[in-house]
View 1: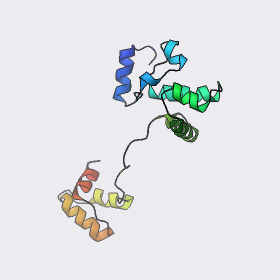
View 2: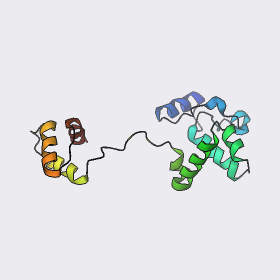
View 3: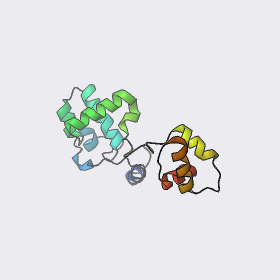
View 4: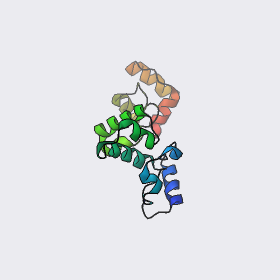
Length: 146
């Protein structure tokens, strides 16, 4: 992204949901007067620099968090995620559930082998009869589209 204009970087970050929620709150010197590489709108870069400021420069947790537009509790969440997953930990978790809670691999396999003529409602009834799991017809239809 370094060779891109600030506007192009902003659009790219926006498209990938990586815009810092409060770029105006980023007061760290690197982002204020540093080279154009440091971009307060880049949420991942800001989180990384916040952790780096604490770990390498010895900046207190409170000051590092404040200078990068985060709270102290948010700092600890970011640090734990980074410790656990590395750079991937700096990306926000996808919101909401990770898929239907009741659906097992066996149910998915059953639905994939089911007749293409059956409706979502009919397949939901068959799943309930066979597996004892009640699914909404729309859940079944979404699973079949994958």
